[in-house]
Image 1 (cartoon, rainbow, N blue to C red):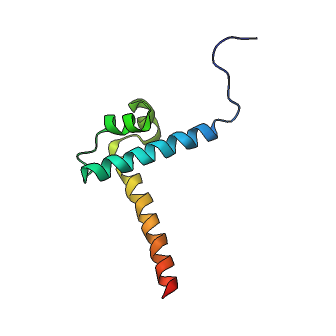
Image 2 (image 1 turned 90 degrees about the vertical axis):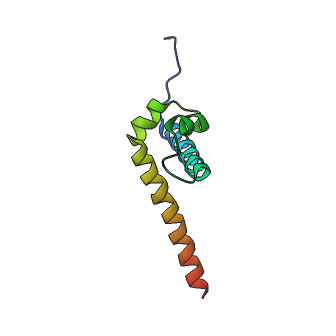
Image 3 (image 1 turned 60 degrees about the vertical axis):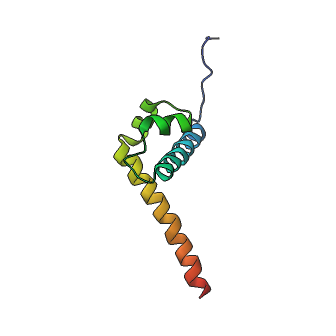
Length: 88
């Protein structure tokens, strides 16, 4: 038996949880600063409890994180709009 860290056969669950944490942290940082400029990669990493290198490996840049935040929030608003229009 080899020592070291245990190997995980399926990392997709871990990756999904990590991405959810990063998404939530990015949302909080952007909302708290009320602007993209005020949101810092360091703050997003701290709130997500991950390092900045991991965020960069998933998203590449702060611009990509912001684009992802806008895309996800837009989708939520669009879904909500459809629900409200269906009620009319």
